[in-house]
Length: 223
Image 1 (cartoon, rainbow, N blue to C red):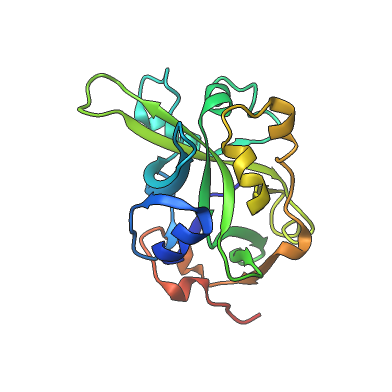
Image 2: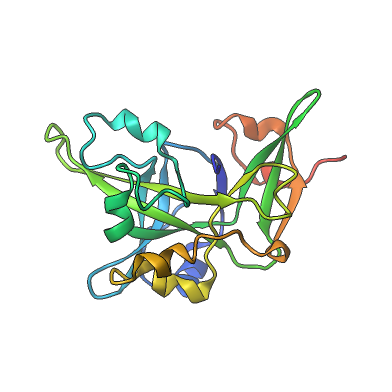
């Protein structure tokens, strides 16, 4: 799964990398947690890309309450096209979720050790995501929410966790955001990232609390 991640690339670099026509500036964040507002890249009807803030934890349009999103922070790539909670978004509302890295927890005799997994390159990653719009008619405006699609872990991640987020290469972004893309084409993108793309390092257990934030959370700690 992916239950915590970081995004600290400056908005100017995000605009260049993702070809954005609009982006909402956000401060660096090193401990993004479910139910928080996160930066999501979407394409409009003309194909122009915008980065906007959505609530992390997808709420299906038919849901009766917002709290269901607390259990929908991830969608399994193997079943996402068929699951009632995700299949409408899979067909019509796909997005990219930028991240400089994400956390996984390794089980050890003295507790769980967090690891930060990031790209070996200078640019952020792009998770495959879905988004949805929910309106309970009791709110002034609909709530827009998102989820991160996961797949089986690659060799780098396997010692830490059996799942990992789907990371899309820049060459796949247009296909993922294309509303006309077919099921087979989209499903072919839901695979583990190349082993050489990522590196992992143990970090402070301070990241366990979503109330903690700051660049020290992604710094390596001793063996």
